[in-house]
Length: 156
Ligand code: INI
Image 1 (cartoon, rainbow, N blue to C red):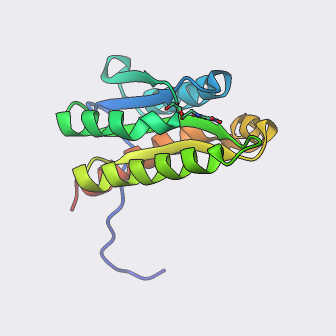
Image 2: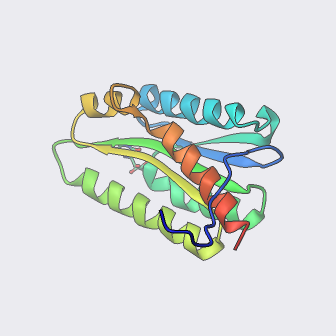
Image 3: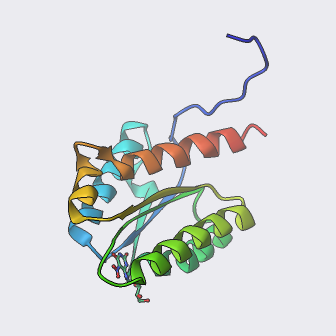
């Protein structure tokens, strides 16, 4: 292991404010992602009253709402959770692409870290696997990434 000055984020969420942005589309999957994210933050000492949940219709609407939250200063970090599942038409590709690009753009434009917990899967089964079953819970991963990134940014 190289001995160099290393900056890394401590996973301590005390006194931090988080906003979760969650889509209603595929809500039975998304509810599991929300549960995972909230559970992670609370286990890392966030207070429940410091976690706000905003519901949006679908993944496409996430970037605009994230932009308003980020610009308002009401959240130290944002976590987007949703599920886009491929159907018979190209609609899936447009929704995924715009949601992903938009969320990345908002984070870069505002400097607010955004955990990306948007499932983009070919099948319903793949989404279920990533929402608290055999492939983990993407909501937990997104909350962890948002917290760690915020803690890194605070040191730069
Ligand atoms: N939105 C999702 O979040 N997941 C999906 O799987 C999905 N599909 O498949 O259509 C979806 N579409 C809705 C879209 O995000 C917008 O809410 C809608 O187009 C209205 O603007």
